[in-house]
Length: 285
Image (tube, helix red, strand yellow):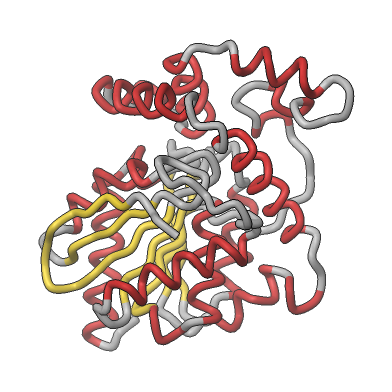
């Protein structure tokens, strides 16, 4: 499998960044730069996202994405890494930390996609998305969504994920528009998004030891859980339970912040991460 990787040169430590559903490696540009004096970083485009073309037999489950991330970490041959995940990437990072503890030095989860089966139209950047994969009407809805221009698509994503969309730099919007334009030409992009969405729902509906709530207590790595108080995608109501179930976790809830705190408030998140790393090194975490 070939993955598109963005590398941030830096210090002696190694950080690995995992994006969320519909995101890409560019979601970590600012945070990775802020942490680079202490840690060089690699940010992956998961299979089917960004510029990583998925293999024909990839099943887009969270388990499959977690295996890809674990394989990437192993390929770095850098020892245990500081692992980051946002949204779907947070659930993926959680699975990696639980199943491959030798690969993870610390874990930072930003609005991880913990189970929440209560439907809400507020979580959709375009309400038509709720009907896009239904029988009969789905094809027509998908054609309508496909007719949106790449910049309009990019702006919808930012409006959904940011508490204050004005904080998103114009230059970053240009980059996101370029990425959406490129992905419009990838035949595998839309199916990958749909199948990964269903993969999340399958995991959310799991019971017993397969539930993410059951997996969390087995994570041994020191963990920082970050949540935006105004997250419209994964409700902050999940934050306290998530941090409580992780054995070595602390919780940071950021006011006036949405679903992608690493993009909306990278300086605050970077300070919190550095504080965790210092505490872990000193044995006070």
